[in-house]
Image 1: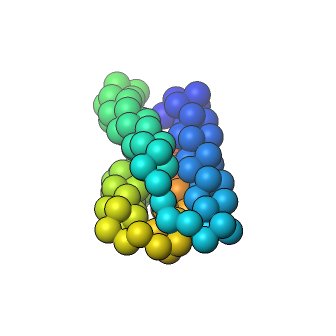
Image 2: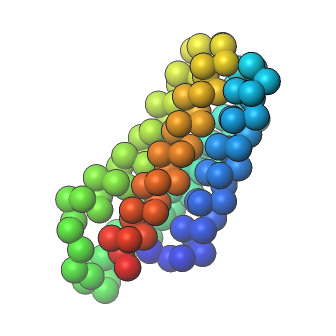
Length: 117
């Protein structure tokens, strides 16, 4: 895993988290711009997953493979699920779901860095 890419995921997911929390406080549903921001996070996660796969093959790191890839796939799935929920439900709870998903991505990134390091 590349630290600059991980930091980009951290920062972009934090932006989505804070934006969602602001909408929860204002009792507003998710807007399309937030879903686009979550899509940017998802693209960064996909690039990170591909680069990690290449690095694992090229370098041959010794990590717990099932745990590492479980975190990667969970991080890749949580934002699209939250976006689908937010698109379907037009209440403040869509903002809560997106905030929880963004927090989950941040936590999973932290765990991935621990496993990689």
